Amino acid sequence: MKSENAAKPKSVQEVGQSKTSRFVTLPGLGVLLFFAVLAIYFRAQIVGAFLCFFFLLCFSSWFWSQGILSWIRLGVETGTACCHAGGTLSLKLTVRNLSIFPLVWLDVILPVGKKELLKTDDDGEVFWFVMEHGADAITGIRERFVWLLWQQEITWEETLVTLRRGWTCVTEANLQAGDGFGLSAQGKRYPLPTPVQLVVYPRLMPVNVQPFLKMSQEAAARNRGQQEDVTILKGSRPYTPGDSVKRINWRRLAMSGRMEIKLYETVMPGCAAFILDLESFHRMVKREYTNGTASDELVPEFQPEEMETMISLIASVAQGISEHGIPSALIIPAYTGHETVLVMPTADGDDLTRCMEALARIDYEGKRTIFPWEEFWPVTHLCGDIYICSMNEKMAGYEEISELLGTGKVHRIILNRRGADTGACLYADEILMETAGRIREPEDEQQKERGA
Image (cartoon, rainbow, N blue to C red):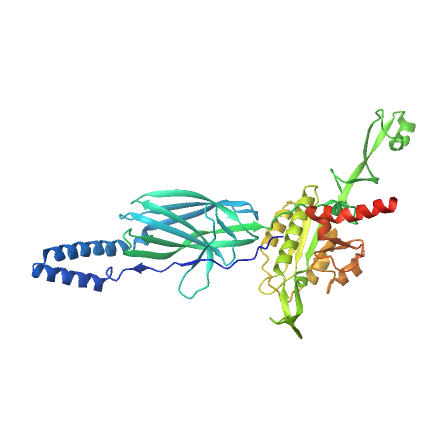
């Protein structure tokens, strides 16, 4: 899977500060006026006329810049506030100029975080900027409005292309306006009346969800299922030619003389619960030096690309099984700065949306995690089949779940295939449609050779 980590910005623009010429200040205007009067006094008509014209130009720019941005009103609304990575979002911006002066140009910059989350549809690169000198660079959405006249209102809808999983809450905007002559550029922070939240769900991949549709201990009767349960009689219907003899209700035939066919209830797994083992993507490795040698000293190593692949895999499977009527549950252990996430199915049927949003909000970068044992045990009866999603076959800290709940209910999804296949795990390359074919081809050839 392609890396979705934030790249280093190619160019960073400094915004948020007012930039004016030294002549567009009271001391500068005083100096210009002094030399203009001096030139007129000594009858230097050309020089005096030029200085007077330049003085009037700078004075107009200074008078224009006095509180011009205080008369600007900005409104931001979301047309589409959430989508999967690779999709598009939409924002609606409304700008109104309440001043008596026009704006030659106005930049509206919305900060969206330190990672390359999204960009404008017509821009080839992500816009990076800093709010003040020495601050960290962040990404943003920049829109430029040209010739905003007095008492004029402009509404613009922008389409945003999402690049990676994540979320952001825009609480303020940065406004920048210029006089058109390059003499004065004013900047101001503008708090939004209503914060705007944008959520980018994990990128979806083609997956094979058949292993997740098998029977489980928490099978529940539904109108649509994968297999009929002969222990639950749903009803009967009149016999028609071609029906199986095994389905004939012989008791009803003996009592009423009418031949009817038994209808059984269909069942499918009641729920699929995913436990994301974040700590498995943070390991200790031996320190390697630039000359190729290694020492016995262990240093932490975080694998963000593999974690993003697993998050996308969980989202894809949850999306796939929801199309078959199976709800999803999600358990994310607590880590530094983030509390435990425990998403369980409800009667509202919004479990998939809540799972997607929880996956989008993951901001794990290593360190220790804390599993919510006290919150998990009371809701195990709602989890149905439990899938522990890890980087490798090591499952430190989760063996207790398999021991107490039973191996028939607890399964494992492994990202990397390592060691011998014990048959008790689901490997990511077997679930992904794009790699499953390449894995099965050698096995099919071996079976053909054995048959020959």
